[in-house]
Image (cartoon, rainbow, N blue to C red; front, side, top):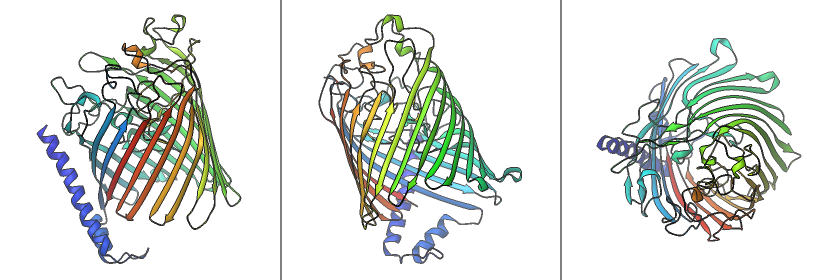
Length: 512
């Protein structure tokens, strides 16, 4: 524990010192020209690039997050074992990262990044094995990027990246975050990615193979034990099961009004053993076929539309409860695999006013199928490696924990407008409203009922509620930015309790 605290302190202190120095320097500098940065900015660039073969950088992200009823869903104290007695959460997250790139040749790059994120809980925590505790949770340090990047391998018009890397495809709907359980601390995938470019055809082909382990120290040792705190610490996890996958993604951008993406994704899940003897996660083979169309029409309009179909099989022990599942008829329960047959759609239409404030008004619609309890198949759409806050920091992350898992959004219709504007070059504002409905009246899973607590879901309604979001972002300079973020949900008849769910966050980001 002492070594973990020391490493974390060094990472954070280094990031903070660099951030303080760069902020002071940037405040008094003359704005640099694109071709020749001047003054202190040039000093910063020289510091970051001490040699022609080396560059490095650092950042520090400080967040204070508060939310209420988002995890407990308003279940009364003494209810759901993990969250019913702890409605409110209030904590600080301090994420520091330091990275470096080495260029032995023009075409070869070695990349490494180290990250740490301790958290200070002002309310009793609901998180993992820090449950009901207050104070500092000292987490492990982790190498969250470690890869080699080879341009033009064997003379081909391609880029080959091998190792731990961040991968974000399209809008990140299905591929955006490989580590959802650590809450945006990291996002990496352990993968080999070949990006082949056909410039004459305006086409890019991505072929990706990956192996993702649930335990943070399974492939590369962490700095300090990747376990919680307490007398019987259990291991922290990056995701819910060990995963393997293959992705083929083809993107064509020949026309501004019609950019076309097509993809095939295979995901293999394997349950893992938890400490000391429990198991968790799924066994499964998921095949996803999908496509995305996007572009700009005339001067003011832009759009995107994406759809995917999933098939395969999944073995989910949380459905095999011997009659304990309140929504699944005994005739549909099985101890084996269930055939997967699921659909998903997301779309967005935006009108750009192209005025002084860069006003934009958009309408979004998303559909993710839910599991029909009257069949032996599994109809719940799986968002794969898309378990990140793509449209909500609260609802599609925390509020699905009792129903599926962290960030595993499903059984959903989401429709509503978003308005964004930039009153000044440094200030951005946005406001969103979504009507949220369930595809199936019953939740795809119900962990609150399975552990014997009071019901969180009615099982008879499809109105998830009305969702509101307001965000203010400010960029002080190119090294310092921040935001204020708020979200609210007025629950509908899908839930037993109608207490408002609230999420508030303040963030400061320092980047060298």
